Length: 165
Image (cartoon, rainbow, N blue to C red; front, side, top):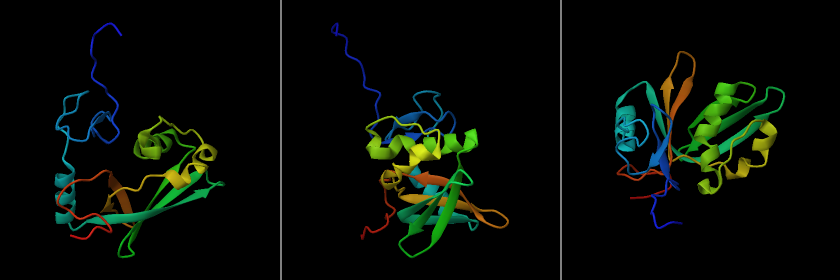
């Protein structure tokens, strides 16, 4: 080092920018990459709870299930009251694989290593380490619920699963 101090850009806990998908510090109000305003998790929850076509789960656990024939991973989110929501990541489609990596891969092992999965076989050994979101928000479609948000590392006034006031 030549005496110049440099700000560390590693984020153990982070929130993603919805515009450019860059990681930002958990307390950031504006994206460090594209300068767009970052939406606060409390605002996302408040908005979702006020809309009748949204479902909000206080996530207490997840159940991952691999379908080798379909090359997909189905994740079922469970709340403390027994309600569930599910979403499927199809690894033979680049967009779906990228979504899985954006949501889960960076958070595996508390973000201590950068992981990006290309195949289901690579994911399989990491299934026990998939992070559990604090809240999952879904929007009502015609025949099903579609997961739109997964909130990790939530700190705020809303109670998380298994936390009593």
